[in-house]
Image (cartoon, rainbow, N blue to C red; front, side, top):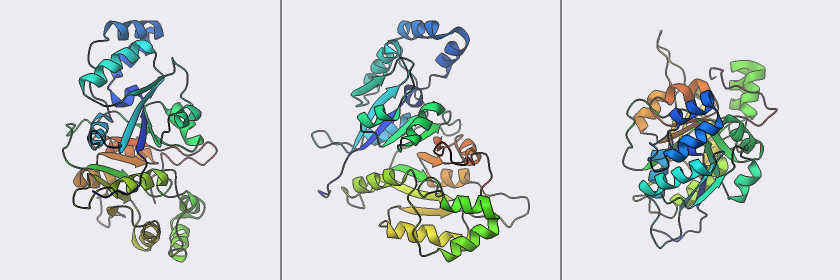
Length: 316
């Protein structure tokens, strides 16, 4: 283990992202907030079942060594009230999750300034509105889908983060070219710009924090893995690889899936994510996150308010 300086990766997570509260949410929708709060207090000693991000948070916290500066810190930041907060506290202690900090807004939206006050690098939530506020406040954030329905058990081994490229690790410049000029214009632009590093996207700073943590371990003992997973193909693959080298070669793997030449067959990110054993996947298109979420915990990354949304578009 090296003595490289680093800051802890600080994750903010909502109660419904860490625990599975879909049953309780139905009560809220059908019967209202008062019945919801009453039920949560009545069930305060009933342990909440694991939710979408439970396994990855559990694995991340296990990286910390007692008595040493933590490498990962997690704060529960939620719209919930104190009744739910009591149940969450019992559940955190039951699972031995070292999450000492909690923010309960009592139904109010989670604002970016609250996340900044808690020092959050990455915000994981099931509330699209809260995620949008975080993104607009320059905080990396995603809307998590339901927990996986296939191979849902927590996997042992490294914590494996998988990131999409354009509009996630990288800025939206190339996507804008694709939207304006189509596939051929995009390929021409990316070929001409192959040696010019791409601008940083909303999750680049998270990747930089993770890289600093990885540097505190020897390569053989590092418990964290990172991968780029993109649909880019051919000449369009060169620029992101050059960019990652310019940044210090800070991913372990790069999976550029491209398009299938086989009639009737379509390559998908979900198959690659399953093959590489990803623990958490970030993408700016629900076209990819929705199918991936059946197998891998997945989060949709919205763009800042005012940017063109491409969440439902098929990729280039």
